[in-house]
Each structure stands twice: as C-alpha cells, then as structure tokens.
Image (tube, rainbow over all chains, first blue to last red; front, side):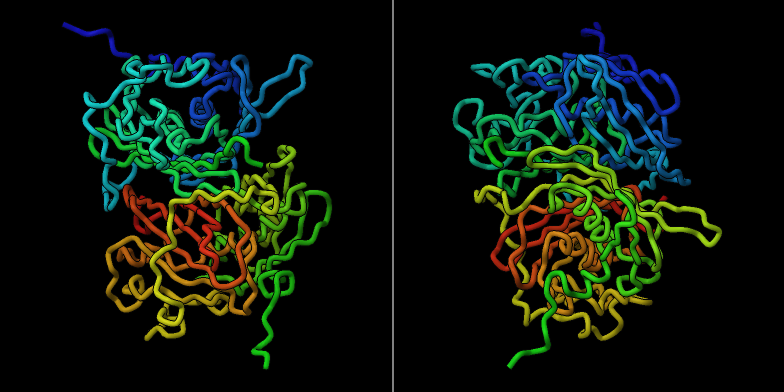
Amino acid sequence: MAQAVQASIGDSEFDRDTAVTRRAPGVYDAELSAGWTILRAVNGGYLLALLGRALSDTLPHPDPFTVSAHYLSASRPGPAVIRTETVRTGRTLSTGQASLVQYEEDGTEVERIRVLATYGDLELLTPDVGTSATPPPIPPYEQCPGTDDAPQPVLPGSTAILDRLSLRLDPATVGWALGAPSGKGEMRGWFGLADGRDADPLSLLLTVDALPPTAFELGIQGWTPTIELTTHIRCRPAPGPLRVAITTRNVAGGFLEEDAEVWDSRDRLVAQSRQLAKVPGGQ
Amino acid sequence: MAQAVQASIGDSEFDRDTAVTRRAPGVYDAELSAGWTILRAVNGGYLLALLGRALSDTLPHPDPFTVSAHYLSASRPGPAVIRTETVRTGRTLSTGQASLVQYEEDGTEVERIRVLATYGDLELLTPDVGTSATPPPIPPYEQCPGTDDAPQPVLPGSTAILDRLSLRLDPATVGWALGAPSGKGEMRGWFGLADGRDADPLSLLLTVDALPPTAFELGIQGWTPTIELTTHIRCRPAPGPLRVAITTRNVAGGFLEEDAEVWDSRDRLVAQSRQLAKVPGGQ
C-alpha cells in the first residue's frame, strides 16, 4: 500500500546534511555536502540552514524569525566550522550572530558567510492574520513541468542540488530553459524535498534560495552570486508542497534584487526574503 | 534673491547630528541627538545613518550597498559608542560589522543595534538600468499636505524628528491622521530634510525609516518597533525631493513587514528596504 517511505523532519537527507556537532560552546563542526551544489558552489540557502541550525542550538528560542546573511566567499564541499555568539536574549526574542569558515590547504581560515539573526518561538505567535497578499498564480502541481522534463539539462554543469529537490516550475517562467526567456523578472514554482520530508522553519531557509534565478528569465547569461540575503520566517509551514514566487523589479548598475515569497498548503505566507545579487559582467 | 540658505551635504543638521569621532581604530564616539526622536525613542533610520558613517570610515569603500540592522534595545538621546570590524575586503565590495552601545548610569554597557553591511562605490557602477518598477503614484508635491497641515498633532507625544524633515504625505494615505485609516498597508509621500540638504547614500538610510508606519493606515494603535531592517542603496540620489512608498502585505502572528522604495527626482529607484516590526499587543 505504501509508496516509497517518506522521510520525516529530523530523519531525512536535509537533516543529515545540515547536521552540526557542538565541539565547544559556540563552536560547531559541519560537513558541507556535495549534494547541494550548483556548478561548483554550495547553495546559499543550504548554507543558511546549517547556520540556522547552529543558532537554534545556541539561542534560547528555537525558530529563526529574521536572518540576515552576508556572503563573503564561495563555499566548497567539505569540512566547515560555524562559530556562534549570543548577542541579546529577551523574553520573546533573542539575537545571535554566526559565522561559517573553511580552511585552505595551508591552514588559512577563510570566512564564507556571516549572519545576524533574531529568533523566537513560532508556536507562541498570536493567531491573528490580516494579510492582503494572495498566493502566487501557479498552475496546479500536475500541470507544472519538473526539472526532469526539460529537453536539455536545466542548468549547465553540475546540478547535484536538483536531485535533492522536487521542483515544478510554472510554465510561464520556464522560457529560459527553452531558449526563450520571458524578459520578466519572475520565477515561480512548487517546491518540495525529493525524499518527501515536509517543510519546517530551517528548510524554509533553503527554499527561499533554491529556484533558478530570475536573471534567467531576464535573459541574463551566467550566475548571479548572492551578496546578501535576508529571510523572514513568519509561520510554521503546514505539511505538503510549498509554492514559491520570486520577483526582480530593479536591475541597475550591475546589481539586482530577488524578492521571494513562500506559501504553504494552507495558503499561509510562511516566508519572505530579499537578496541583493550581482549581475555577471557588471562592475 | 536667495531664499533661506540651503544646507549642503557635509554642512547640515543631519551631518552634524550623525557625526562620529574616531577614538581608536574601530571605535567611534557619537552623540545621539534628541532632535531625531519619536516619543522617547531615537529614530531607527537616524541611528542607521550614524552606524553607516562609522562604517564608511572603517571600510575601504565609501557607500553602503546593503545594510542589515538588528535592533536590540531602544536608544536614548546622549552619548553612544560605535564599534566597527572589517569582516572582508575585496576589490569592488567590502563587508563590515558595527555595533552601537550606550551606558547605564551604573556603567553597564547596553547594545542598541548590531549591523552587518556590505559597501562599494556607487560611482563605479555600470550605467545599465533594466528596471521594471515604476515610481509610486504620489500626487504633485504642492497637492500633498505637510505635517504642519494636520488638524491635530500628527503623532501623539514628542515628535522632534518632524521638525527636521520636510514630509508631504499622499492624501490617499493620511486617513489615519483624520481618524479614518484606509485599512490598506500603504504609506507614501515626498521626503526631504527641513534645511534643504540634498540626499546622499547615508541620508537614504534615514529616509527608509522616516515616514509614519503603515500600521497607522491599518488601524493598528500604538507603535510598531523595528526588529530588523535591511536596506539596499542602489544608486546615488539626484538632488531634489525624494518619493517614498511603503507597503505592508503580511500582518500575521503579531508581526508585519514594511517594504520601502525610495525614488529620486530623476525617476531612479535609489533605495529598497524591508523591515520586520512587531505589532503592539502581540506576543
């Protein structure tokens, strides 16, 4: 009767690959998995989930409410160390800082990302919802092509991360994969983890940075590295696939922003993020 | 012939009140002016400009490109110390961290804000603009009421900051001041400094947090303290008044976001920001 066994929160590929081991107070060992890479770079959302997990352990509150990450250098698969600091603890919110570093062959430490984050407890939020935003107009799941359906490799080069995701892109935003980008700064789709693990606040940190960049639909060639990414987690996501909509409105001076919204199966806006990214060939 | 002498960038009330004095490498003395307070709290955008000025001095690049600020406790007028750290320096971008602290009467140090910021040089940006966003629909300057035109005090209590700003709100978003909020999460208006000083990247850090909160138009009573505010400065602003549009789409669980856009007199989108704020009476 059962389909393939569905992974659960706490026992899944995502959980194993974002595990951190506390070596000392505020010092965590991690192993950046090659499974979450695009080209040679480790995905920025995956890294954020690792940092988020270390901060969940350090701070007295469990859930990321707002996480601001500045990306300093490209991470590589392999060992990493995360250092955390408690900046302030309050009754309902606490703020922490975290830094992920890796080591060159000669032992030189190189910082990859630095993060400031404010944590709280999503379970304790008041039940009020007065949201005027509406879920993005994405066709039903069955009508959206998966990344396996593309006539050619969806992304050039190695795309290990795609094996770990269950992405179904809105047909209106896949023109780029067919050589005919829409010219609009929009990317939308259904998001899940390939092993069926449901979403939680930590995996939402991955979700906001896991779709192909809007730059592809703008006809921009090449990669758009993230300079800074800030994510607000607004609600604990319900089980089931998520809908993600990413919008770019301002491309100027060699930079662009990407605004992401993530909606859960109960039509709740569970995460909002914005990143500043660099257009290739710019400054 | 001349009107009242117009203040200039570098010689204005804003510049004097955001001055910082380097006491040692990475340590700056500042005086939080009572002139930029709302009720008893020092305005968060003004504080951000102070931190931004200290980082401009510390980092090799002059202009804030993206600044992420986590607000830890309410600042008070009076002495403050800003500590900065250079996190990474690159050819075109550098990243720094800054912290503003004040001291209790017994000498206890209390951190007010911590900031991560990535700086660059706006003069060196490529001239490309491929922006799909359009300036907000604000009526002409002369048709927008100034804060002096309100039939009653615009904000309850002390509003020293209003004497330093030249705000003209869109009539469509001033219902709250007349006891009839629109119910929409929108606040728009013209923004300038009262002494006529033109905008620069540092003053934009003030501008994104200087309008009345969208919560007023949503009929939310009381103040909405900022938890985190991230600002992208995308272009050096042209002289002349700015247009600011702030939008709130997601009010839920006792929190809301405010998205601000700032446009200059040449119709360039010069700044984008998003903040997470707390609804009074929530958690």
